Amino acid sequence: MTMFIKVISTLLATTFLVSCSSEPSSKRHSFKVHQEDAVTICENRGAPKFTGELFRYDPILTLLGDPKDEESLLFNPGEFTVDHDGFFFVEDYGNNRIAVFDPEGRYVRSFGREGDGPGEFRRLQIQFINDDEIHIYDGQRRRTTRYSTSGSLLSVISPPPEWASQLSELFSMQNGMIVISHSGEDHDNIRYTGLEGCFIADNGDTAAVIRTHPIPKRYLYRFGESGGGVGLIRYSGNPIIRYLPTIGVYATTGVEPEIKLYSKYGILQKIIRIELEPELVTQDERNAVSKQADESVNRARERGFGVEGREASRKALVIPDTKAFWEDILLDDSGYIWLKMPEVYDAETTTQGLMFRVLSPDGEYLGNTRWPEWMPGRVSGNLLFTSRFIMETGERIPTVYKISPIADDLIFP
Image 1 (cartoon, rainbow, N blue to C red):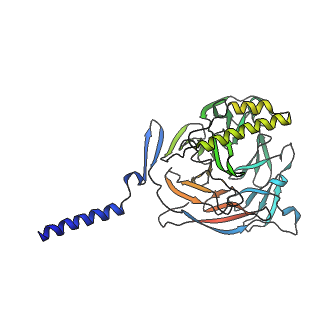
Image 2: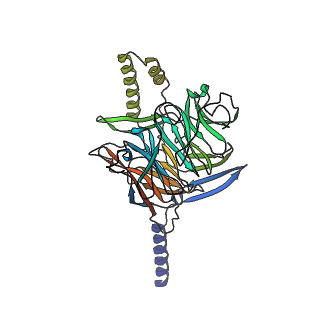
């Protein structure tokens, strides 16, 4: 009898320990890859592979310019990137130019200026840098300018006039292709066409569209405290489309936890899915969005212009049942995917950095990380390029951080 009690006690203790140490099966990390026709399907289920913070960020370099050299000083710097020789290319918004710094952070040269002609910009953005080329997109002029990394102007690429009015994104591709995200009523299209022809500024010929992929429009809201109550922080109706020269085109809406990868020739190659629990939009948030839309129409009526457009937007307003899983996608040159999570930032929370979900090049959901800063940035290898924001002065200081994995078995990049 005593032996029987001991056996039962041992079994109960073992069962208790197992139940305490094991996670529920639904929470365990699972990553499976299979083929459907010619498309690779990557399925992430349960928890991410790593829990807790993924990385440590250590500042190693700042790009300030020389106070004795006025030309080297930046005015309202934006994002920046690096070429294969270690030279940094910084968006100098205030001067509508690209400022170049050497690997030690010393100013070298700049190219571009404000204007509407070749090599001139109104609202510039670095798209990517690859080999010996850097591509700069002008969001106001709706065109891309190709430069050599030494600063020589190579060409200006513009969409056909009939596309320009509804253009969402434009990416020039080094393999002789171009990607256009062209707005439709309820979807956007990824259009691929030849680089030769009308996309060269001095040639008016028309190039044929090779492929068109419909991407459903997303309706993205960020909610937070605004003026003492819940308010609409941001709204967007466009899909997210990003291009990585070495791989292809990534497309996602953010409202579905899914990313599609197209080849550089427009062929769907991979679908990455993540099992995530959606967050519902509350009735207070729904009311706040409607109220702000009404106020926008009323302001237009008071000014006496823009009424028709505001009324049309109000009529077409769609408030989703769930919030977006991510609001932007960042690609680094190692193939890792960084999904920016929707968060609200104000004067009290800017001490926190941007929050990301991180996926491996294979599509596996590794885990989450928070940047040391809340300004946008880029990742190249094990380096993060972003800006420190000084709240007291409003100054932005471009800073390079070294990214180090915290978990011993996390390989990055």
